[in-house]
Length: 253
Image 1 (cartoon, helix red, strand yellow):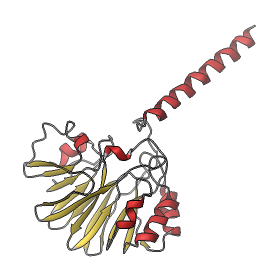
Image 2 (cartoon, rainbow, N blue to C red; image 1 turned 120 degrees about the horizontal axis):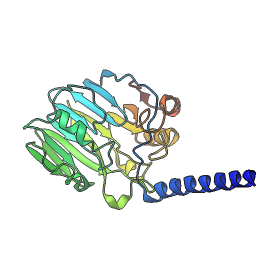
Image 3 (tube, helix red, strand yellow; image 1 turned 180 degrees about the vertical axis):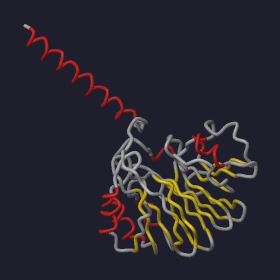
């Protein structure tokens, strides 16, 4: 009798667990409790005449004539203040209010999508500029183009949300930050990209193989893998991307 009861309780526990997993996947939300134990060494490097620092995950800082952050997440203590902050979409690992508060100053301008507006309300910055895919804005002399970023076979980043990646012109160079995206037809329109920042971890974004297929088509001068070693993915994904890409790849970290 006791043995039958044990197996009955075990079966019920497994059913509850699987139900919870399915519920998380159905919502299209990225669970905040998923964390990688991998430790990364954040790296600053001069590439194509500009200083680039990978902050981990999809976060980057460009420290040249202006300090520009894209999707800052899990910043350390006392980071440098931003002139411009770009936020690709409203998920907590991209629109991180805790991290944005660390780097804003009264003169900071934030460029983001409408879904982030309510989360950013109350920010004491010069301006919050909202963009949709296809918009181009000049912010403090820096040209910023919002480009599509979405999933084709997953629920996490629907096309109809109009979330974005960015093309930013820095020191005369065109930097493409893909945002959270799969390989999409709009990537065929990318031209004259000097540096491409590409997600490689799969699960929520494109895989290393898909990212390599993308850069092999639009041929940036340099590609840098991102979106690994924090939520999902490991350094092996970055190395896999490098092995398959037919362009120069720099792995920061």
